[in-house]
Image (cartoon, helix red, strand yellow):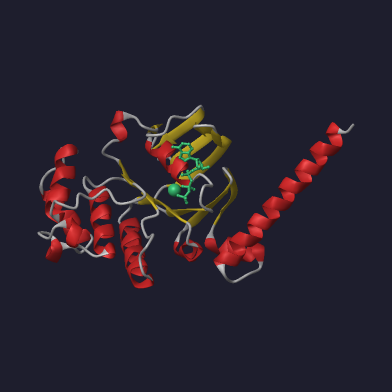
Length: 254
Ligand SMILES: Nc1ncnc2c1ncn2[C@@H]1O[C@H](COP(=O)(O)OP(=O)(O)OP(=O)(O)O)[C@@H](O)[C@H]1O
Ligand SMILES: [Mg+2]
């Protein structure tokens, strides 16, 4: 039977410099779904995504991606990672950027045309990347991630800086990919994007404070707006923190 988990993380601990970002967290990302990774700036979204794609040094734990250990050479063609901030070369055309990635991945040249069609950029294929609008440049980054038809696409804040119309367009594209069987893991700190995901992982301060669906998030917190729902969960989590520190102070005082 095929494993229904695309990603399985257990006991993950990561330090970055002096910061202990994760201290033994666990989570599962399901195949064929769009999972949103949400949380405030600095909570560890990028660090988690880096760990999953195998470019982050970890101090403990196990990460299995598509049934192989994270970072295995066999995953190179099966997992795509779109980093935070653009990785597009401004002085190359859109097509040249894509051809460059195809060459690195030893993917057939036909992949360039396939992904251009997928992100609807044919008409801009011969334009220099530095002459594109923000939304077009984002679609080039996404096209670069899609070269080689990866099974798991990991995107770090792909919609940041885009206006609501472009964001909606990009989400339509994510859903099309998902319907084609691609598993997507997408980070964002824009809470209204949460409602567009099949599943949600909410991080706070290096901990998973909710592993849920958009519907359950709203039902559990009794609000209609995801931003308010997230704030309610953070409040709840902060209460738990305060109770924990009161208890440990009491214990310390004997
Ligand atoms: N290169 C680094 N060296 C030391 N600490 C780092 C480094 N990169 C990140 N950190 C710290 O690790 C923690 C998690 O950072 P991370 O980049 O994963 O957060 P994030 O949730 O992606 O934030 P954002 O929404 O701002 O992108 C933060 O406290 C951050 O300051
Ligand atoms: Mg980040």
